[in-house]
Amino acid sequence: MIQAEILARLRVAPGSKVSLKDYDPGWAQTKEMKALGKTAVKERAQAILDQNLADLAAAQELLYADDRYAVLLVFQAMDAAGKDGTIKHVMSGINPQGCQVFSFKQPSAEELDHNFLWRYAKAAPERGRIGIFNRSYYEDVLVVRVHPELLARQKLAVGVGKKRFWKDRYEDINAFERHLTRNGTVVLKFFLHVSKEEQRKRFLDRLDRPEKNWKFSSADLAERGHWDEYMRAYEDALSATSTDWAPWYVVPGDQKWITRVVVADVLTTAIRGLELRFPELSAEQRAALKQARDQLTSEQR
Ligand code: ATP
Ligand code: MG
Image (tube, rainbow, N blue to C red; front, side, top):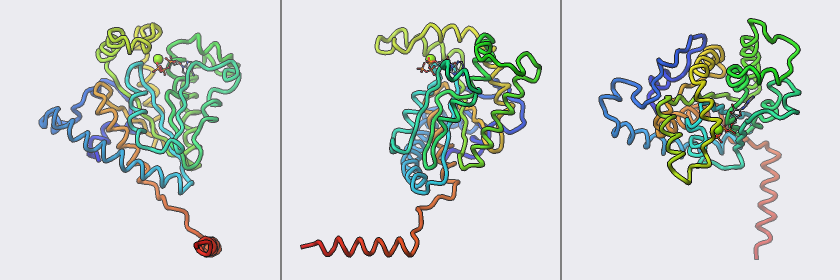
């Protein structure tokens, strides 16, 4: 496991005012780590990740068998911060049947005709499952805030233009997450914090390598132009919606190995923290099993 001290540093304390410049997108989270050196820290991170991925497979099986809880992982980030790769790696060892991934793009006409949480509520994970939101209802206080014309498309009759508008949305989000957690869904939220310089390098890499060209979109470059507005929207959203029941983690995004180990560690620790158990059989069910055993044994020649 990652040192509790490091995780505590990455978890946004409820009620605190987030300033993203206080979070290092790089790898050295403590003086001790810096003293150890990057190679040593990387090796240690890999060992923790390997262990977590092995534990995660077992934890997920128990989550599925126990069938009382669900886990929702929310991923938000600027483009090329590594959402897709993190999801792929962290989930690599688990049973696909127990996992659901939803990627949210621009809302459809039908979705726009409903309240902003509607499409996400429909995709919330079933009991026993790990659900992943690759982008989420947070887009409705991020991209929609940076681009007011998107808000116009939502054709809202109430609240638009009021000072409280975004505050009200945060309140709705907190209430929605409270509702989920009260009903047995653990909610964990990750902001993959990539630096503007690292994004520049990754975009260039997408342009330089033919097999990565498909990943490049000029729309991403346009969004990069709004970097500072996005950072302000993120800071505001993270400050208002990191709660005891659904905390945010600001995960360093410039080194993929750090991003992966942090997400895997938070997830494994959260599932382990639940009191999961294999379902216990009643006396009646046990008697039925015995009968089945007797029947199968008597078929033996
Ligand atoms: P990738 O580029 O890795 O495939 P992505 O998540 O960036 O993944 P895209 O199809 O490139 O996927 O982009 C989806 C776009 O949809 C993003 O620009 C995002 O801001 C936008 N989007 C998501 N949710 C909403 C929303 N509720 N309202 C408006 N735009 C949204
Ligand atoms: Mg994209």
